[in-house]
Amino acid sequence: MASAAGNAWPDEIFTALQAAQVRQVAYVPDAGHKRLIARCLAEPAITAVPLTTEEEGVALLAGAWLGGQRGVLLMQSSGVGNVVNMLSLARTCRFPLLMLVTMRGQEGEFNPWQEPMGRAAAPVLNLIGCRIFELDRPASAGEVVSAAARQVFDEQAMAAVLIAQRMVGVKSFGH
Amino acid sequence: MLSKRSERYPLRRRDVVAQLLADRGGLLVVAGLGAPAWDATAAGDHPLTFPLWGAMGGAVMMGLGLALAQPARRVLVLTGDGEMLMGLGALATVGVKRPTNLAVAVLDNERYGETGMQPTHTAGPADLATAAHALGLPVTGTVRDKAALATALPLLRDTEGPVFFDIKVRAEDLPLVLPPKDGEHLKDRFRAALLGPDGAD
Image (tube, rainbow over all chains, first blue to last red; front, side, top):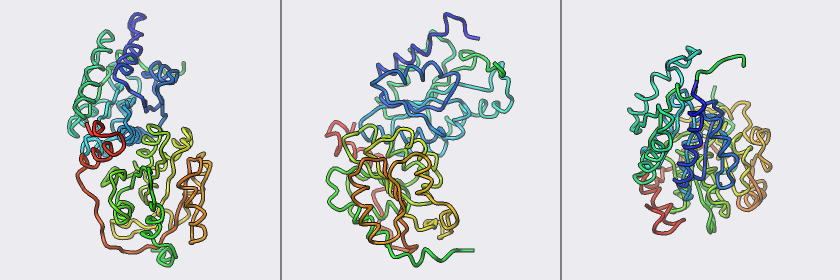
């Protein structure tokens, strides 16, 4: 599990998103993003949108950008599999798209059903033309997300920050 | 077995869309891929219409993002029954966020028009207006004739929503009226028209 000192990284990400003027936060429930989602829900300047599936978020944020707002999509690596065709929208129209992906299926994973998309997430994102930022140290969270946000919004690109499972901790069942 | 009933529906999709977009003022429009995008273009290509050439299942969500970003503007999503069925969960998400300025009109011919007029689930038991109501949209209905359309039009354009109407239209092959295909151009012109010259950046 992340150390006590390392548990504040979602706050660093929240600060980076605020600095990037993110106004819409699309998310599916996720233990790794729990704290960040709670911060977004508590922030009046942010509209947090719970999704039924991750691909909704890609379309939502395209609409947000049409309307002059920046957004971010929060999901797990399993969600990468769900969004692939919808990423054509961001890619073809060059809608800025920032995705923060908590990885599953890595070291310490309890559930083998998470392994296929955990393994495939980065190659799949590469194939569809999405830039990848690896985040595996809590101390780098703010810096990496800020760098990704700058590329996304300045260059109208799509980028995913892959947050290593060791930062999130190992999912345990029954607690 | 292909149901033939929608070939006899009285409402014609191009007439319906022309009425929905007449005197559109500041209306912001997202048109789902295929026939709804061609219908919207037949009514007049417009910078504040974003016609989709892909992203099947995404039209309502795109409208939601736009409606949340522009709460003072009316947002109308025009889409087809097949496109709506692919992203039905979006109605649940709209039902949770309940943006009052969002309206959805499904042009429901009970067919997949771009792929050879195969029946969609609305040719069977699927009832999109009932689904939208069950998912929390406050103003919903099914339109089958001119009188019902006359009632639905002002609700789609003005009333506090989110609003959802399933408009049963005739299954028919119509000439293609294609919007610009360049997605970056469509995006930039929309933002420039809505946000001013700097918005295109």
